[in-house]
Amino acid sequence: MTTLRLTGPEEAADLAAFLTRLLRWDKAAVVRLQAAGAGPALAVFGHPPFGAVLAIRTWELTDAASLDATVSAGRLLDTVVENAATVTVPPEVTGPSWAGLLPPRGGWQRTAGIPLDALRAEAARVIAEFRARTEGLEPAQRTRAGLDALAEEIWSRRLGETALPLRAVHAAHALGFLRPVRAMAHASGPGAAPAAGETPALFTSGPWLRLRTAYGSVAVRTSGDAAGLRLTVTPLA
Image (cartoon, rainbow, N blue to C red; front, side, top):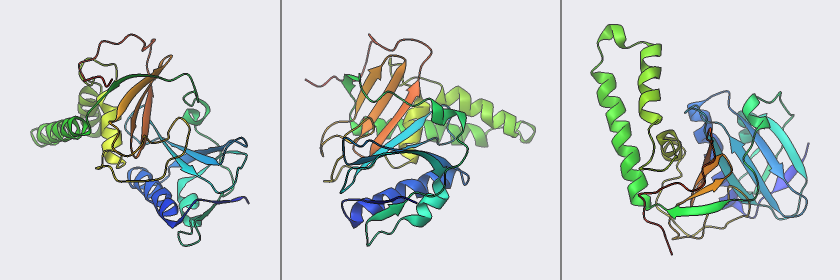
């Protein structure tokens, strides 16, 4: 098995925290790991159960590695040694369909900055709406199908006039990506975080949309080309 060394115990703890959040929402979660030989970085892709949303995190490694594997998130978490800043890749598993269709590594175009406070407020608003409407359902309507339909109605809405569905904002909140920013190390790649203090931003690449924050990215594939969207969020210069 391959053992990877991260740049420090804090990075290893951050990887463990990300995997723990994924497993909180899906105890059988799997992740796809990628590391290109050209650069010392590990990208981790996950699929939280909030619709067609991919979560992406990237960590710096002390040495370049070449890796592409789909593994159990739980077994990967078990191999993280925070004090030694290492993680060992467990045996591969049969990958789900989402693992074969990942966002592109390049070609992303930044369309707008979205204030972190606005994202946090929107997440809180729609979560409160879901809870209130759930509590208002008659017992006969409070079925799995009824709750799924209500969730689909709410999370399919778009953020302002962008094409980004609110399920992406919900996923970012649930995975801890909308926390206040602190100074942290950053790796390169499609899920790499912006510099500390940089406003979260929306990017497009063909049919893909990606919301990038200081703690990771969430990406969704749209049915059409996302270029040229009319936005109500405030662009950054």
